[in-house]
Length: 157
Image (cartoon, rainbow, N blue to C red; front, side, top):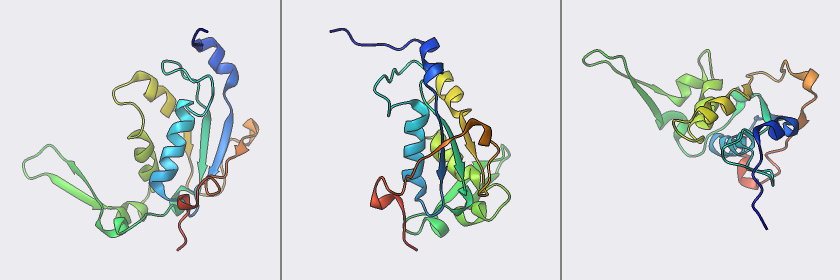
């Protein structure tokens, strides 16, 4: 038997649209499911060098939850480029700011292959919305219930 390797032209015909409601879901576990769907690893015809993943829409990204004390203790650092220019921001400030969807976006991005043009292309198939509405109704996405996959995916507050 020969191993089947999908060609890029075959992958475009198999792309599906899925929508995930992120309300009450743990960020890391949700990001792991999204990264798997974007890469196409859930499909039997997965090929590492071909974009065979699905298009993913995430709604209610501002209502995700964190385990442990990450809400107050986890800090994100960046440097301005000037001496003494180290800056930090807690998870609480980011989620309360103008773009809370960036937490989930960065979590998924960090689970994709590093320094890969294919990973950058696959990240364009991810759409994250903070509210319950999204602009992709015309694609008739299928709802994916991540909370039902594992009891640890959803956190009881």
